[in-house]
Image 1 (cartoon, helix red, strand yellow):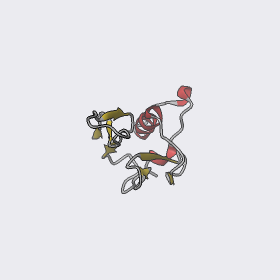
Image 2 (cartoon, one colour):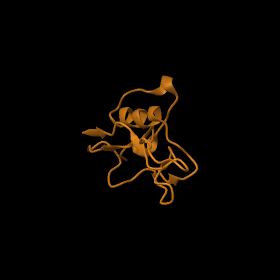
Image 3 (tube, helix red, strand yellow):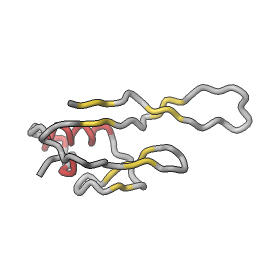
Length: 99
């Protein structure tokens, strides 16, 4: 099962603004539950100061606060865990595969 979120919300108020809208940021995440993915793992993380997420090392899955994991990389990891050949896309994401 794959549960993606649609988008994130920017929680910062512009300086001096009396009224403002919530920004739509491309900082979404997803939850994947499957016997073929690397279980019991959180890939990436969240910056406690800004509330914004950060990425992970695609090879080993360790958090990487200086990196943003692209949507294409996340979905490539899901496809690879399912056994799909994603070699033409050149987006290896072994951290998401079980084993």
